[in-house]
Image 1 (cartoon, helix red, strand yellow):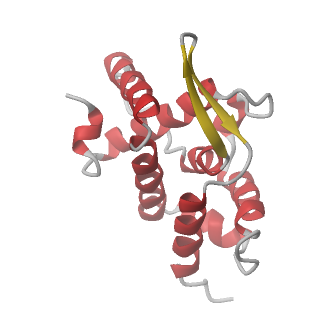
Image 2 (image 1 turned 90 degrees about the vertical axis):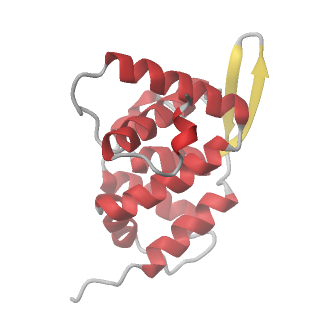
Image 3 (image 1 turned 180 degrees about the vertical axis):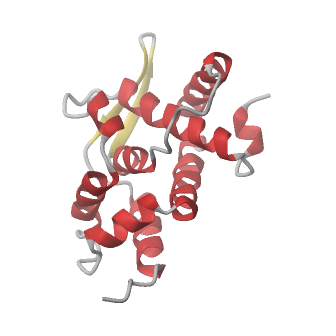
Length: 165
């Protein structure tokens, strides 16, 4: 049974692992030298700044602090991750690769050691240009933001009440 059969009803550990392997798979498939494994260690503040740059093309009222708050809030980060994972599910070669990586990770994991990498997976998913399947495997090209992910994250961030100053 594929992990995708459970979508969107994952347990917390399943969601953490699936989000992590999705981000790692996107990095592994990247044919852009600017997309490196370093993105997997980007803290929420840095991820928020990069995401803000992309979202501000659509809506200049989006603030880095609001994005960071969404990435640091477990419920919001889970919603973001589930949305991005749903987008990944719609690309069968990528979904298969992520499912294989997930199964391999589950076999080797003995403790919940991964953090939810919502920031990394959002940055990667909003920059996916296309995927190319060849004998050498799956390759991802990155350049511009994915409209569906930008719309979702913009709406989510705007729906979060601003903290009292």
